[in-house]
Image 1 (tube, helix red, strand yellow):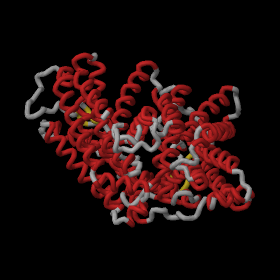
Image 2 (tube, rainbow over the protein chains, first blue to last red):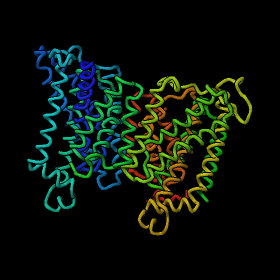
Image 3 (cartoon, rainbow over the protein chains, first blue to last red):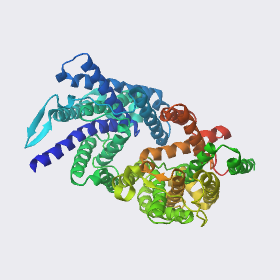
Image 4 (tube, each protein chain N blue to C red):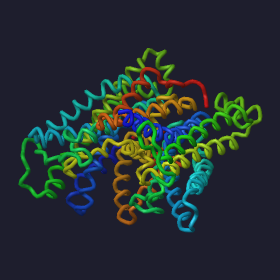
Length: 295
Length: 318
């Protein structure tokens, strides 16, 4: 019994730690730029495919299997550079428009990325065969847990802490928070908005692509994974509160664990339960559990 | 006056299309007409009330599943009954959804509608004993005006009676919407869109108007959704998926949300362009995504905006 509970909880927390990365990317962009980035799921998918390719290349050149997580994470971070292209090439043209147009522009990116991924990597699912259990398994309270899951959970926690440090302890973080609070004032004080927006959007993108890369040993990359994950990440940020990092953290835990519990108890409920909670939160507390505070 | 001539000429062209155009192109007109009905309703929210719904596929799905359910489980084949039932069910679901959504605007409105859409999507996907899951439910051939047309070959049925039936529904829907947007109700909606605070001060119940606009647009979406079923003979959950909602907004923007007939033009261009692109390369999303980006950045008024070359094109003149 405990073994089962631990299994369900840990797989929920594993999913939550991936969700947190994508949702954190969504939050930082929304907090500063007030853009709800539908494409962050697509960035996640891109990271996943890049991860598969990088690990495949790494195995091809005969790198030690124990270090496969390095090329995986690096590839995930590297493709995050697409953020700057999307930001400079598309979004920067519509900053002065109604947010409807900004939302639709990110939807355009969703459409383009889905087919771009099919074009590059084909339509059949891709996976990293066998690497998942490279680090072995661990017995925890009778449950057997892949060590890789624990590594990802730890990495996600570390990233959460570094984001917190970045936002509160560095100059860049202070600028981000100032911009999120009052853009005009920040601009008047000499902050170059183009510089901030480009960096913030790239940061948000890289968090998504990294999340995609890290999830990939545990599952297979599919071209629809992005549009499926974005609605989960959306649930996370709504429950946690738009623009709040703490919200992303708690929201990801709520969604990840609840989903995992629902799947094991009554599979039909899976996401239905999550969306009902989302509606409940939006109706009762539209700003979410941690809403109001920016970034 | 000129606008009226164009509309009448276009309607006449659609009416004679089955006589002159190839079957392939005539069959493409069926989803076009169904989507045109959906988008006329969507644009009451988008163009006239200024609210962007990212969950309207919910009501398209309700309409389509109503028809599929009635024909395959309920033994009811009359399309009139199906359309009325779809409208009624669409309205029934829309009332609580609209009551909650109408209090919000902009991003929160979009998110709440998206969440409701996904509730319905996961419901039809997961409760497969009722809905057939991802395989969907068959939409058996409906009878038209009390006449069963089961003996007819499928193509003849679709390019003949069903085609003109859809056209009639579209014309009625357009006339109805024309009346709505030119009524005091429609004018109040536009006032609310342009300045909600002032509208409230003038004594317009902002939330109430948004509520009714939402319910009306849901009814249109459900009726259009029911019309989508018979040509394919099957309805599946992707009809209710959030990307389908996004495509609906895309079509509206493509045609031009600021013009009454913009969404109709958008549906037409979207359907034909999509088919044409797909006949050349399988990657229509890549091309359409790029197209959407260009429209958003360079031509936010859509095709109608390019034709009429007027900035906030007043919807009172088509």
